[in-house]
Length: 246
Image (cartoon, rainbow, N blue to C red; front, side, top):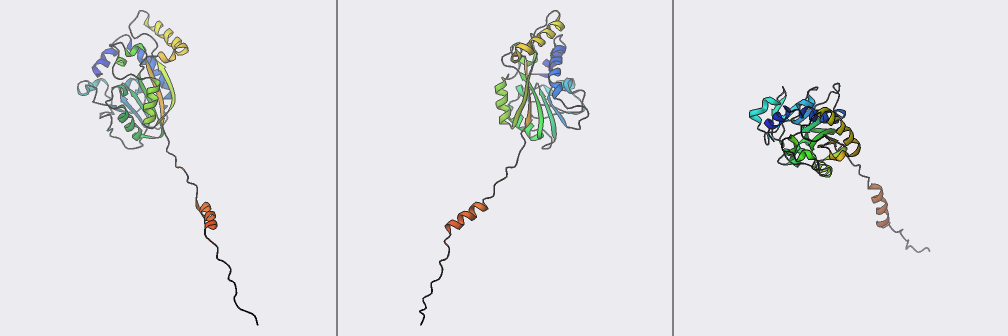
């Protein structure tokens, strides 16, 4: 997927409803403006995180980055490989991945690198194409490119990279084509889809947390060893006097 393709799609009449559907789904999971946390956006996240201060990473592996970087560039945009991000360990509290994971050469390597950056209990929001939806089959929309996922596949990947699921949301229940009365159709489809066929949404939005490392207290073996030693070690026998009394 190229940034040029995303930019072309954003000029279509379908794009505002796509952005709106995803933005509504991820909004409850984003930190508020008052929270003093470090936020990382990977992929094409500017339209969703424009209301907060965040670090923006554009991986060059799957984007024509140097020709179209101005389309998504912010004051904090950097270009970095997906598995070598230039941030300290345990430095990020929230990460948002959109148009990112499905294009990664090594999804596990990307998520392992994200895990390195996150604090214990840090939250990640991952948006990927839903394998069973129409949105993964129509070439003119961004979510038809890259590797689509099912909910189970997402869970397996995240678990292997050290993340535990909090919630799975779905968005984009309307058809991925431009239709008359698009606003009304999108609103009706989203309402019905959220009620009756949630897992058919165009994208899966996974919310995960980094597993908290807990130190396991080892029970002391000293009392058991002492008790065992008392049974094994023979006690000295009392001395028997051999003196004969006159």
